[in-house]
Image (cartoon, rainbow over all chains, first blue to last red; front, side, top):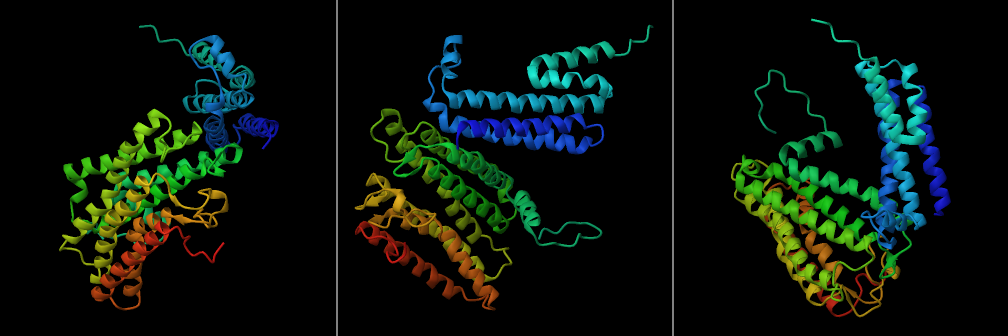
Length: 143
Length: 283
């Protein structure tokens, strides 16, 4: 299978997950199962397959920045890295939606800006969610 | 069935989920191992679809997939047979340590075979690369250890006087499980000492029998290994068929079939050693 096909399949799959998260207030259970379990797991299987198949063909390693760069010179491992982003970002997005709903920490309209941020810049979205959650925390009653 | 002091016993429903729950309550460790090994097949199948590398002419992931399936079937079978062990066996410390060692050996085998595939080298019969060559005998010991579970089950089921199943089925279980270890040691041990599964022929999987890959152009010791290890399935299956046919006391018939099956295994073994393919007229 051409790498380009795998790339676009994985990206479309992740986008489906993000769209489901957008309508999650109406279908919280479905959103949790689809975007928090099924799609991240499919992407995880794909990622694992890429690593099993191509890890040994790559050069470099995790120890220095140069070695990490050399690792991603392999297009197969670059794709694996991308699928890693897609899988984990979606999983974190689904976690944010669920955490906000279950704890009641944040209304959905404040979760909404965190989602595209997590899709595009994963950790920034997670940080924004925690910042908003902290800011919205009710003051402790003064003794 | 375990007698539980419940006011109204739940109706027993047959089905995959009932079987699975029974396996999990009888032998949780082997049941969990069986499920995990089955799940392991999924990413390896996906890897097989995108990995262009070949080993002896077939996709490099076929071998670890076969091992995961085989070991999953093995541990699932033990989890099903665990109900015939003497009451309390699976709770004993000695048993728990043994079962833990068996699962450790299975994990070691899978990591060894999976890593060899990922790194594009041979797991079995690898004498060219020092590390892999050093690992090979260790893995032989692991394979022996994991196979001893069948013999331990044979022994424990044989000494279970409280067992209320048909005598023919009990005989089938004891003989089938009991034959698996010695027959496997003979066939797989020879394969190991000959440093290859093929006797004559190309040794390439490409031309092999559909799905299972047994060689068509020479002797293949894996045939005898397959039947040897599956004694624990074939002999009890025959006994079960006898019980269903209304012959629950036919102990002698089961013993004869066990002996006949052993002869058949040794026959396929001799055939492979003579360099001839199994069922040459197929494929």
